[in-house]
Length: 359
Image (cartoon, rainbow, N blue to C red; front, top):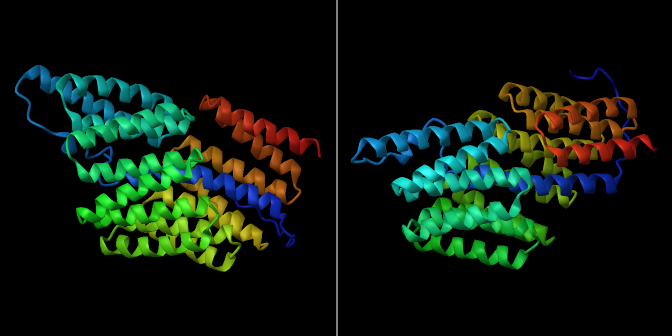
């Protein structure tokens, strides 16, 4: 649905762009849950392999098979944007894993459960799930899991505005990673320290931390981690209004993510590029990127990402003063919010639409 229009190079409203950037930064930091637990998070294909542990009785094996199936279903539900259903599946899986005493499987399930709670804005429940996962990692002396749960807890604290606590938590993770020579953990922790610096407004320090993180991530061949850190770096450049480096960095992240089939990082890079290109008046390029974003969302059959695409279209058309088309996209986003039973997002979209129509 590429728009065959030529738009004038309007001077972008800096206040508007700043608001959009900070909203993106808030959302994107939570999207990090998709990447932070890469070494211990289970994909839908390999959950059974990761969790397999011989059981001595048929009842235990049956419970294990049922729990593994529930966790796979939960992963699929989360990928499709149905966080409520994910939570239900995870809670059932946890009960079964608890009954057979499998701590590692419980840790994996708490990870997914936390992500689903975050998606719904249930932050207290998300924090509880993360801390339970960390406690399990400590009980089992699983240092790698400790590193990644600490990083996720730090991300959570960061979003609560607890910058000091977030920084200290990441420092703990970095110390463990350094002690056990976990290069992947060092790269992740440095990247998250960059997030802390960025939220404090120290973008120069954030940029340096991200650059150091990239060294570790490239050493391990962690392409997805590299794309994630590049997106963080793009955020820092964008906040500094260094649009040339912003576009180059997001572009690199998008290419890596595209090659690796990492749709989440690809969508995140596209979001940053849309904002950056709009800021310098390249609206046609921004619309091309939004078209690509919507295609990806539809291919994934991810209703949540489709909603975000419609919302971004609405924002861009509103920015250009094309209120009729903006209204159309906002209304389409509202329909999807209702389909997802996401009342909070529906209210936000209705508020945007109402304010725009009053102009």
